[in-house]
Length: 516
Image (cartoon, rainbow, N blue to C red):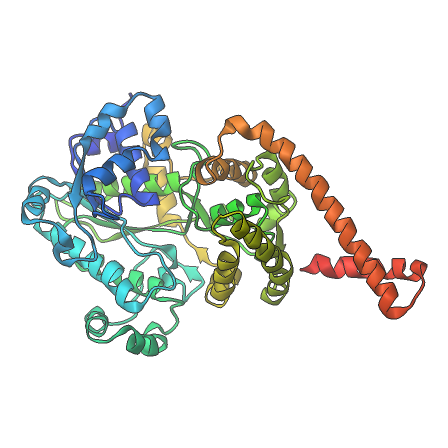
């Protein structure tokens, strides 16, 4: 395997990773082990969960689909480099035992902090504890580590969501973190909820607010050791690695493709002319790993003193912008290229620009079919979930409206300069330039990945699923004909006009239904 600056940097260095069981964290682990064979020990912060010890959870992690290619390459022996550290960013001192903490202090060289609560609806008390205080606890550990070469904090492009033109720089803190921590510790959730509008100001939710505050925790320690902050936008399926289309995340487009492929999500509130900032998971991970190397290299150039805090946007809006109008005529085609054997109805996803029209469409195309499908499921002894899912979407629309219908432009000049500074091997192995990404091919792979990794359907049953898709198409067309025949008869019955005149009115109804 050819050498590179980045692989040389990580060779023999031990890495501590928070959030290692999440979408970003587990992909970091796989990438380090696959492409940096001489990387040192990977210490993963993990907590016991649902009665399972951290060792049991580690064994589960090793079975994650992210390692499918890894296992095809017969690299399983490298998994022995992983050492679980029991703890939780939401606990004092990260919940790490004194013995394990000393192990980290004595041995860790690089820290990747990706743990966070991503829930837009979580209370300020919880987000303050996880996102703000959790970052502070990680920084406190870093300050104790004897030979720390780099800290990379995974933030979010949306920490500055109160402005739409965002640069790769640290913006003023939205509030005093000590005050926020004190309020979160002393007030109950109800009292905090009343204060939220005053505290958040222009921030859309507690997530962006506390993640913004967390960046300043990193900035405050940047003079002690090399620090970098990466700000991904909406993280989506893999572009190239470990496999095109791979994903375990149901957030963003992966989630609604999953619902659409089942035939249960038929309308989506989205303006296809607005830039949607998506960034593939493999680009994000490469950006994190490259940043760790880069901030340490700057220290060497700076006479052994840490350079200023480095901030990089892992985004697409100003460099490789994507709008759904690029795919409006192709999405349903992709859904039928890779249909589900478990689909309950013929997939037909339509984008709706207006929340009002979406709500009307949701009643007709989500709630009414969902009610009957849940009823059938309940009679069959299954667990009905569709009505609950559709209600959750309905209730979240007002909160998500700002993210659905706002166009942000995230400048990425620093990231592109970082890409240009990479040597030839690093450009190939740790690619962060998305200039050659073809969005149509990418989303075709994403839908295929959603089918395999989220819906758990094997490529082997694809032909069977395609046969079922044709049957569902016939049923879909028959139902539409029956519906419009009913409308036709209703027009005649209500107005008393002739069949010929009713036939002339029918296209108007077809057009109106097309709007929702």
